[in-house]
Amino acid sequence: CADVAMYQAKELGRNNYQFFTSGMTERAQESLEMENKLRKALDNQELLLHYQPQVDMASGAIIGMEALLRWQHPVMGLVSPGKFIPLAEETGLILPIGKWVLQEACRQAVLWQQAGYPAWTMAVNISAKQFWQADLVDTIGQALEESGFDSGLLELEITESAIMQDAEKAIDTMLRIRERGIKLAIDDFGTGYSSLSCLRRFPLSKLKIDRSFTNDILDGEDRGAIAEGIMALARTLKLDVIAEGIEKAEQMEFLLAKGCTEGQGFHLGRPMPAEGLADYYLQKVSLTSCANVVSQSAW
Ligand code: C2E
Ligand code: MG
Ligand code: MG
Ligand code: MG
Image (cartoon, rainbow, N blue to C red; front, top):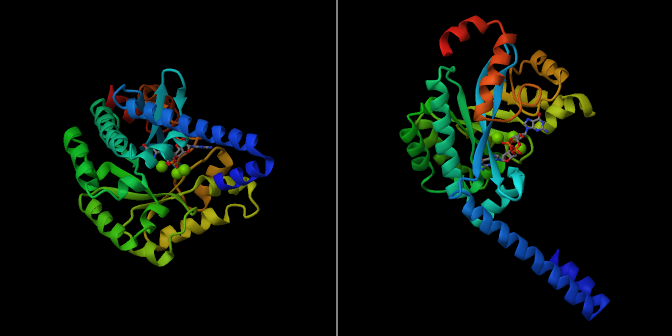
């Protein structure tokens, strides 16, 4: 990209060359400033987690939560992960940040249990860079020990592209994770390039149907054929399956009819701060048949 810009600038003459160079410097400067801000974000306690419910669509019950990282900057406001995770990956800042996410998500899960909520799974996103760290399993173990969270309720979400970088080594790491009882899900499934023969050998627990395929149920030409294909694949491989990005009741109905019972999406619940859970939960249980049982146990 830079080469093309230079080439065009040279074509246009010296002054333009100057112009393009300063433009590029500006961008480099901006990215450096962003990096410096992100570097301070952890210490300044500007990072926080939102939680999105994962729901059993047949009964309406919450079965888990996914922790989603947010950056609340004093000037920039709430920054979404799409805007800073790539930078965090590039700079290696994802390592201390990812460690914090694991600790914080486990801590919150235990707080909810202590408050009387059911034993939900806590799903945590693990970036490729984190996945390939030699001390990953220790870092996870430490978060579990410090919080007292049950390893059987922790689920790590990794991407196809992360584990396909070196399938043999990935299997080794994944086995060490599974040995501790921790679950492993593939996030955004169907968007990467995992070979089916590799997939069979990965010690996985779950596939997460990417939200583009959930979207296709109503808006795509294939009318949900890919989502259905992933469900069939999950059945063959004896894996759980969850659909993400469910925004409409009709998508949910399609998925349920085809045998996918777990779902996540704005239609079922938006990501929310931990403090928002009580309201969401009360509203939810008043809509489901288990309302009586739940109200006796928690408060
Ligand atoms: P993801 O793990 O696939 O998470 C799902 C994303 O889809 C979230 O975006 C969520 O807010 C959004 N979403 C949920 N339901 C719906 C829906 O019905 N419609 C639409 N349009 N979107 C929906 P978010 O929170 O902006 O996160 C984006 C991505 O950033 C995540 O995708 C994940 O890859 C990454 N990420 C988030 N938190 C972390 C983290 O703690 N560590 C790492 N390494 N990556 C993270
Ligand atoms: Mg995820
Ligand atoms: Mg996803
Ligand atoms: Mg995604």
